Image (tube, rainbow, N blue to C red; front, side, top):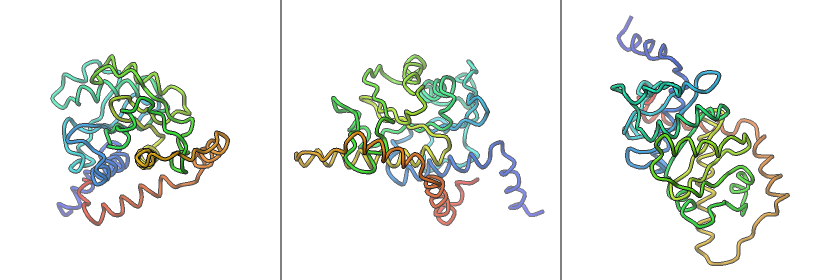
Length: 255
């Protein structure tokens, strides 16, 4: 057996290999979109039934370099998580550990300080109004945390996690901080994170004009949001296309 084939078979035998590949692709594409922040920010993905065991990026590794084999496997109920040699970032543990411990439907959680979502989080009113189709996607599906309490260590993470207990809420605008997006899969969460940033950008630039906004009625906004909730396969195709591009440009992400 060739060394290359042996290495490939060894990789594919990694626990949760396909999930790792999806998450690694999401990290790398987030960096391409310039939605990352230095070696901060974190994504996580539950891999067991109750959601308490999850994959997450290693401490302070740039999103553009993360590979499938780099991802940490963490138990949200393990009090010794921060004591080992491969301990995650303490704020990642505080925020994502609390979410996966307390919010079992949050299978995938993506936290970024992307520019436009963070501008939105810096406004006195950080709600996203339905002014276009993209922003309507989040009508009645996002919540604003207006009580920023410092870095997301365990106490702050526990508090934030309680804002995501309603299964309909998929985005938490973290006031004075950034955004947390949850989903059923990597594809679901990434697609939502991408569109929330686009929607926030449209809203912020609309505000720049100083002209009145054309806001959708609640009935139409809810109709559009419901239609997009049920739109078949779009998130999965989005991630599949990004992985196809990465397979051509930088297939090392799968290793």
